Image 1 (cartoon, rainbow, N blue to C red):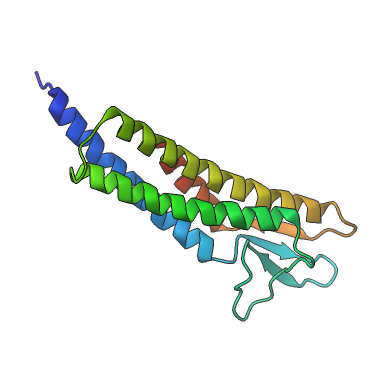
Image 2: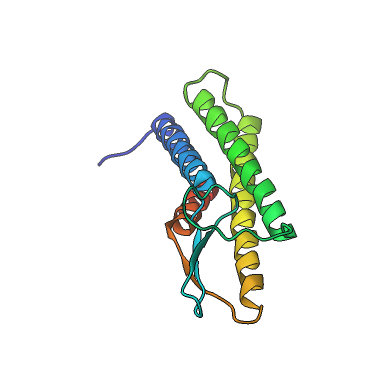
Length: 164
């Protein structure tokens, strides 16, 4: 019968956790720079706009609310916080996995808390952008909206940080 010793299980856990956080960091970083989170289409003029938390839409029409709503501003703050915390979490997990620092129970708690906080910040950024789109849908002659792949990728990244 195959059994794993306690040391092997800890080694396996500390190999998976840094991999999950590194993948989550890359996903959150990719989504944060990608401007096409939602595609908005005006039904009357058939114009297509794209919406994201940041205004870097290159040669494509972007929907830019003026003045910036509180949802967009707070979403930006939470997404940037998630990127910074994701980097910090990845650094901490890799340094603990490589035994650069000795593993203690306090370090495990700190890394788990920062990982959860990263997922919570990314989730709040996602919810705040969704609230901005919902606010836009409440106006007269609202545009149709289509969720693009960054929403799903960010959701998967959030799941990785909460699991890690």
